[in-house]
Image (cartoon, rainbow, N blue to C red; front, side):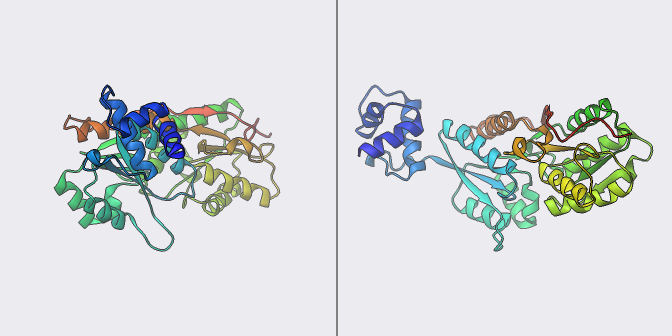
Length: 329
């Protein structure tokens, strides 16, 4: 019992005495405090007091493309805390190598009558037409974070991809770089399309020849960098930190040093990017702000309030480290 009280108290942010009062249904406990303790019991796998077993906290699905890219677990962590504070229990759903897809998760979540779903880095449309139609038919509250495709009529929260490119190019041009390349995700991936469009708008003539579209992986970054290096770029902007690490690998395979011969800028500011060799200059996503905005929008829909359907864009931040330096002459 002592272990249970301490765990629940720590998770709910209250004293053990308060947990004990909730468990014994004592009077004088604020509803919000009681809900936090009851939700903590649900999350930690403890049984609620008999009187409250029919009041199980509502579930919210968090659908992520994968857990290999550190940015996705970071979003899950940020949203989990915000959901808990609203008395909601997050259910993590991510594609697996053995074939568990978004479609499977959507079917599972609908069967359990979840209160809503947040999609990160993908969209409900990716799951397939049947699942998308089921979600629309039920009018289930949904929010998309950095959606992979256009989804008008659905609440969306995203980082400002155009501003991210502006920040990266401004930094590189201030270092004297004139021939700059872009490694982005596949064509049709909306965040990458937006970055590519802004890149070409700013650099204009010849910029399209210095854009490489590839898969989001280290190998993809390495392959995308090869053509840009052959074109003589002195700097590369990347649509993810993972791609940036692939670009650095490609440079080293050609005997180039980073940043002496090639400057590299990533995107995300994933965990450990400050400890790579060299530490990566990158454009940071405001994960906590975006996660909080997504949860707030979802809660508004769950409570029957009108949620804004215009896409809410959040400003990124340039983090300068050692992977960028003055252009070689």
